Image (cartoon, rainbow, N blue to C red; front, side, top):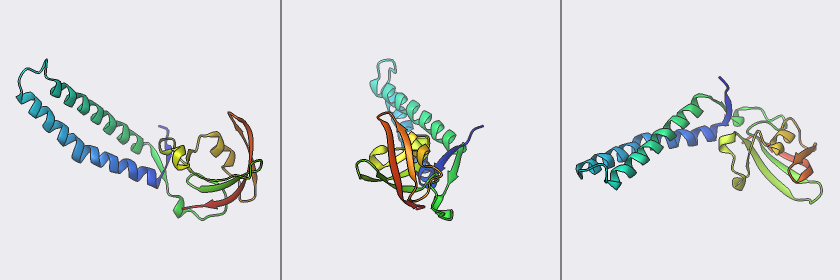
Length: 158
């Protein structure tokens, strides 16, 4: 079975969502189904069908999260010694050598990636181009828009 890298933050968020689904959402949905059943004829009972649909979604999401957590290789970058290398979980500040634009990204697992929050997947071309590099190194990265050269200006393990 393959394990998937995940940051400690990402694992905590999934555990929190799982707890919410099991302890709050699931009981609420079960109660909704019971109330809808009391209304009689289930064939034409829209509340019943909506509650069953919610239940199906909730149970599917619970299974999905449990599967992800059971196959996760949780990496807590704060427990690593910062040797200046870009690794999974590191927060990296880069300088685009053409535009002089500085950007900070955190390299995370696929499920945690969110470009709006500058969280990039370890499997993205940008992350793959930076992994193993050190401060002051130049990374040449092939992107859909063409080749981009960036200088690594800071690597934090936070």
